[in-house]
Length: 70
Image 1 (cartoon, rainbow, N blue to C red):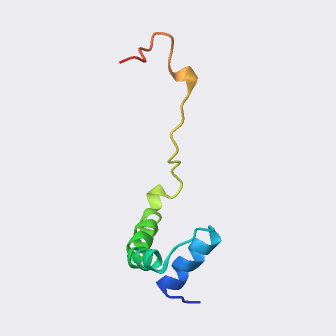
Image 2 (cartoon, helix red, strand yellow; image 1 turned 120 degrees about the vertical axis):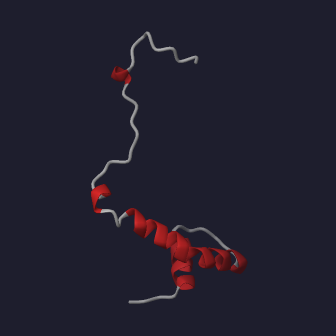
Image 3 (cartoon, rainbow, N blue to C red; image 1 turned 90 degrees about the vertical axis):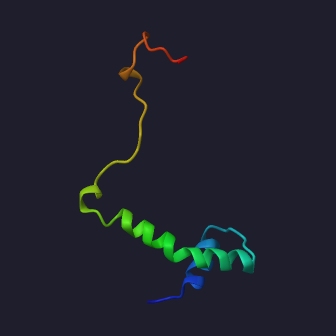
């Protein structure tokens, strides 16, 4: 099922319950193709498919000698 970008933007805003004026929807609709292409590009690299991008703080990785002030 193909829809135009304005319909998609309105559906996404509606699902998120974000109110938007016609001018705001028009601006988001104009930007949507570029944003969508960027998101699709994130998943286009097979090597990065299963990479965990989250940064985690591990308390055991640092000791009392760590100088947090500098």
